[in-house]
Image: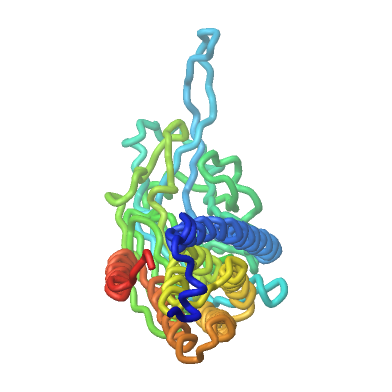
Length: 443
C-alpha cells in the first residue's frame, strides 16, 4: 500500500535532488554578489550628483564671493640695502621690511543665508560685519639690522589681504591715529600676500619711535568659511552668527557657546602660538596658512554623504534578506524561483535610488522613512503572493523593518557605528543559527 506522496517521491533520488538545498544556496550566494553590480552603479550616480552639487556651489560662490581668509593689517616700510650682484659689484637695491601690530582685536557678526540654483543644490553664504582695532608699538628696526638712515619712510604703506576681494561691499578706510586714509586696490607688490589692498601711510623718524593705533570697519561677503591670520602679538577674534552648525577650524580652538539657532566664539592667540615672527625682511620664508583659524558654516544635512554610507550596507541588507527568504522556502516547503529572488534583489536596490532622489528635496530622515516604507511594503506584499501566507509575509516584513531601522541607527552614529554594528551583526547571526539548528538540510 502506498500514498500519493510516495508516488511523487522517487525511491532513488539523484545527486541534484539529494543536494538541492546546497546547490540553491550556492546559486543564491552568486546572486547576492551579482546584485553588488547595480549597487556599484548607484554609488556612481551619487558621486555624479555630489560632483554636480560642488560645481553649482562654485558657480554660486563665484557670483557671490568665495570663502574668505583675512590677513592684516601689516605695516610695510621699504629700505635701501647694499647687495653684491652676480658680477661682483655692490649695488643699492630696494627691499621691504614687514612689521606686525602689538595688539589686534576683531569683533563682528556673520549673517548667513542660503543661495540656491534650483531647489536641490544650495550653498551657505554670509555677510560679515567686522570691526578691527589695534595698535603698533615703536618699531624694532635694530632686530632686523636696518639703519634708520636706510629707511624710505615716505613710501611706507599698510596692506590688508582678502582671499576674494570681490566680497568687499563698502569702500574701505583705515583710521591711522587721527587720520582717515582710504585703501587702494592691489597689495603694492607685497610678496607674502596674493590678493588685497594697500594704503600709503608716510612716516617720519619721530613716528617710528612712537606707538600708533588703527581701526578698520569692514563689510564682507563670503561663502561657508571665514578664516583669520593671528598677526598681532596678541590677537583676539570674537564672532557671532545665527547658525547652529559651526565647524571650528585651525590649531587654535575658540571658547564657544553653541545654541539651537546661533553660536558665539572667541579665539585668543599669541605670537608664541604661530610660525612667523613679529617683524622680518622680505627674504624671509613666511607661511601664514598653518597658523590661521576660523569657522566653517556647515549645512545641517549632508544627504549625499549619508546616502553613500547607506549604500555601503547594501551587501548586508541583500544577504540577510535572501537568507531569511531561503529559510522561509525550506520551513514553509515553498519553492521560490530564482527569478523571484532577482526581483526581490532589484527591489532592495531601488531603495537606494529612491533614497537619493527624495533626499535632494527633503531631509535624509524623511527620505529614508519614505523609501524604506515603500520598499518594505512592496517586498512584503510580493512575499504574501509567493508563499500564500499573510502570517509568514507579516513576520518577514517585521524582520525587514527591523533591518532598516538597524541600518538607520548605524548611519546616525559616528564613533560608535563599528561597535553597534558588530554587536548587532553578532545578535543577527546568533538568531539565524538558533532558528536553523533543527533544519534537516538533506531532507
